[in-house]
Amino acid sequence: DDSGAPILAAYHAVSAGRTESAEVAWGEKLDYLQPVESVGDLLSPDYLSVRTFTQAEFAELMKPEVTLVGDAGGWLGELKWSQSGTVTSVTVGGKALTGERVRQLLSLHSAAFEASYSDGGFTFKVKGYGHGVGMSQYGANYMAKCGSTFLEILSHYYTGCKMVRG
Picture 1 (tube, rainbow, N blue to C red):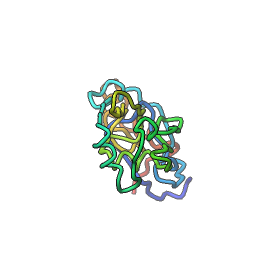
Picture 2: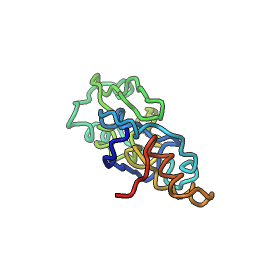
Picture 3: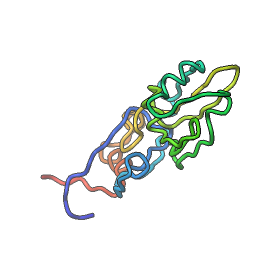
Picture 4: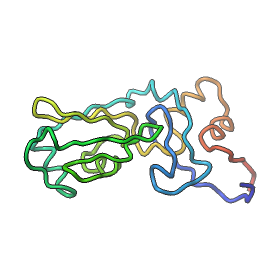
């Protein structure tokens, strides 16, 4: 908008290759915090991380939300993702949780993950580092190294915003 009000200049370390909307991450729609491509993030050493958990570790870490009993192969249900790759919903032990809540419980780098169970353990392949909303620090640095100006970088990550002198 043209109100001249300052924005919430959210940023994170590394996106999953595409930033996330504030609406998906926080439940609040902000027109200038919409998903954009952030291709430089794919080159980050922190882009992909893998965490594995035994059945016992996984059950203990999930205790604040759900008690897991029975066949561990049935503990993880369907995962649903946003267009940017954030898990919006995952069923654990029959209970629907957000990807952000699972991220918190398991200390994952982000809520953009794939999860699987095999051979008595759970594996989480995680993309990005942080909440994924707004400017990616790694992506912005990559754009700068490729010759983008600070105005081009800010305009890319904060959709439709204008820089004005205060």
